[in-house]
Image (tube, rainbow, N blue to C red; front, side, top):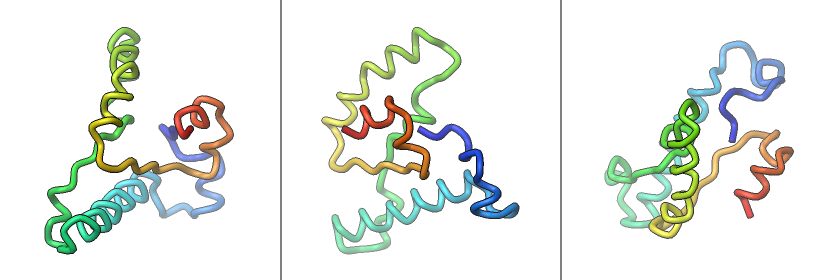
Length: 101
């Protein structure tokens, strides 16, 4: 997970490039790639859906957070594909390595 940019984001990427813009652009590109793989028609990319844990697992309610985390396996079983967006520091955290495995 990367709830915020890596510490050295501005040094590596520059002052103007916003972390959220990069993440959302990456999702759009992935949706287009998935549409091309599935139907071979780029115009269907808007029909591709994503479950984004950052948006779907509340961080401010521990009971609800725990409940949502316990459902991750069910989300994955229902998925046709799994796409992971991460930064260069993602695999430095044991929890993230566990999720990746």
